[in-house]
Amino acid sequence: MKTKNILPPVSGMTRSPWRLRHEINSPDYRNVGRRSFVKGLGMAWASVLSASALMTTATRANQKAGRNTGGTLTKGDAAILRFLAALETLETDFWQQYNELGGIQDKEVPGGSGNLAYTNALKKLDSDMDQYIHDNTEDEFTHFTFINAYLVAHGEKPADLDQFRMLPSSQASGANTQKMRLTNLMELTVDTTWWTRYRSRTKNPDFGDTFPPAVPGLAKGEFPAIPRSNADLMPDLHLQAIANTAGFHFASIEQGGSSLYPSLAQRVTDPEVLRILLSIGPTETMHFQTWQDKAGNAPPLTDPTNGLVFPDLNKPPFDTEDFNTNLIMPEPTIFLDRKFPVCSIIRPTETNGAATGAAAFLTASGLFEGQSQAFFDALFTLANEADDARP
Image 1 (tube, rainbow, N blue to C red):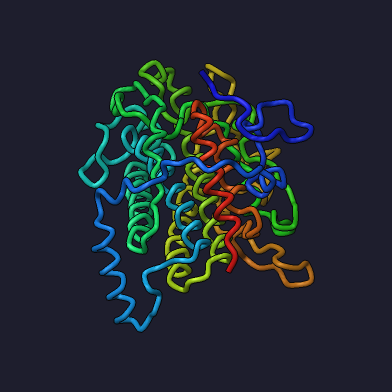
Image 2: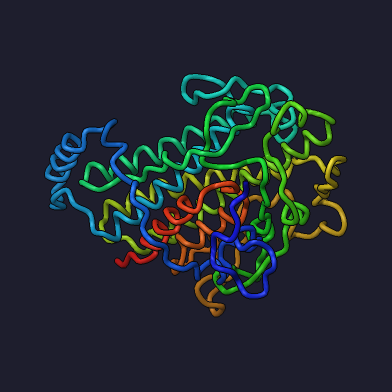
């Protein structure tokens, strides 16, 4: 049964609020109400990592470097790190699903056995897609494990979402069909406004500007980004549409991370925590740059099973600079104040409501379709606590 109405309603919208298709910078995303704290984000990682040993290591390192942190974090810094660890856990969960079916299969990223037909469809976007998927998956795994270990080392609770692993897996050949998931890649509504946002030379979401999507159809339904079963492996155009959806979803997710880390970095207190955010954040941007390039290679087509259209972005009416597939580096645009010269930047980087905006953006994509109310309570509690942090 699908969970409905898990977010406060937004004026003027008729669809279930958690399916709203807004940009990450939408004001509606900034006003998600505070949720009651859900107990259970506890010490699962303490069973893997010895907190006392880690604290001793951290203390020695601080002493050697001349720092006097006392092995503690401010409440705000801990909240920001815990929220980021939770999001990286969620990212790892869905990247593992992609890797099981379309990535390199090895001991670095275990889980599935690969699906040749899906992998070949992904390779229409780039011949190295399986390697890129594998490496992105491994990166996200290291992000959440490192941040959680750092929290434990400083006597803080890590982010632990294991109690919410309740969503079913793909049943297609190659997937770990018995594994329970945190995320759902089979009913996505993908926001592709990031495409034109990064190509615009006159607009910036931090100024309240809005942008047209590159693939309008992806915002109008619920589409699979992985084969749900072997029935999705044909006809060929349907499977290619699934691979195209994945390609645009990859970039949609990673552009969100590109914005989130600099947005939250403005709220941290400790220089070492700032260093963590400034070191991990750029890797998300490297991911985005890769996936934006690959999404531009998605073959134009119409899915014969549901009518989803992937247009040719280099032909009318899309043949303008705002849609050009070769413009994969951020075009210069307005920043901070319109009186300044344009600048090539990450966007958005507004810090107010950044965490709740990210949580709502992911929710609206359908990534958590089928999750429990307790999951959303926990996610938005973590987001609100991160947004409450002050330097």
